Amino acid sequence: MIAPVVRLLARLTIFASLLAIISVGAFGLWFTDFKDQPSGPDSDTLIYIAPGSGHHEVAGQLQQAGLLRANWHYELMRLSYGLLEDTTFQPKAGEFLIPARASLATIFEHLDKAQPFQHRFTVIEGATVSEVIQLLKQEDRLTGTAGRFPDEGSLAPDTYFFVRGESRRSLIERMQARQEMILAEEWANRQSRVPYDTPQDALIMASIIEKETGLVREQPIVSSVFLNRLRDGMRLQSDASVLYGVIQKEGAARPLTRADWKVDSAWNSYTRGGLPATAIANPGRAAIKAALQPAPTPYYYFVATGNGGHHFATTLQEHNRNVKTYQIEKARQGAAQGESQ
Image (tube, rainbow, N blue to C red; front, side, top):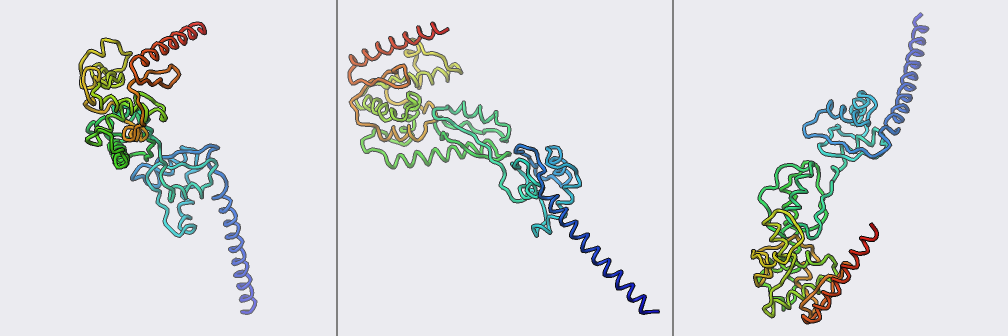
């Protein structure tokens, strides 16, 4: 009687074991497909995990962003993550870019291991500190205030990367540190004959060069014009510096008039000799290099060509001819524009 019972129990044990093996195998196949099949939207998704967010909040955000079809998907993946990665899943704070049609496994891996997404902030050559500060205020992914107003010229034009939550002050300090580095490097390679007493003098000149021409190939020539003038005791007579003074007084740029050349200010290089009191913009490396390594030219004058470049001249007589040519070209362009309208 005992033998049949033992055989029955053995068969039931074998059957149960086979059933368990089949169940585990079936679940394994299902789970593999479950975690690896595309789950997210058809486009990349930027998701922000706030500091201190718990699993419930993270699951809600993922579901709201269309990265989860059901809340229990998050819980199943979270509980399984330790078996898959040999570590407890704990999403990091920050913004993360989840690729299009990402699987649950990919989503969890990004939240656990990926670097937070970096945004771009670009400072263009010739931008003033006021313009940069205004753009920083408009960037709502940065935090805090700009703090003490930076010195004009102290922010290096470049593209900066930041993560959501970085402070505006921190980004400004990075800009300043970069400009200090660039200025130090270019100062170390300066020509022996440049007449600057300090790197700050070179920065002021570089800012004028930057505002006078956006053509990098012209900047060493423009630099030589201004340095030739300084060496001979002439005034710089830079319209860009006069305009900066107007902006400081009136709060906005406008076309200059002849009367503006006569209104004295710390930046009016028609009424005052030498360099202006401060830089008039944030110059890029090329302009700083041009200030410290001017081209060897005999020029004392330049005027716009009307096509983006400049005519350079050694004598006032030659310069006056260039000015007349510019005025004729400007009138021709104005007439052509009027006809097209």
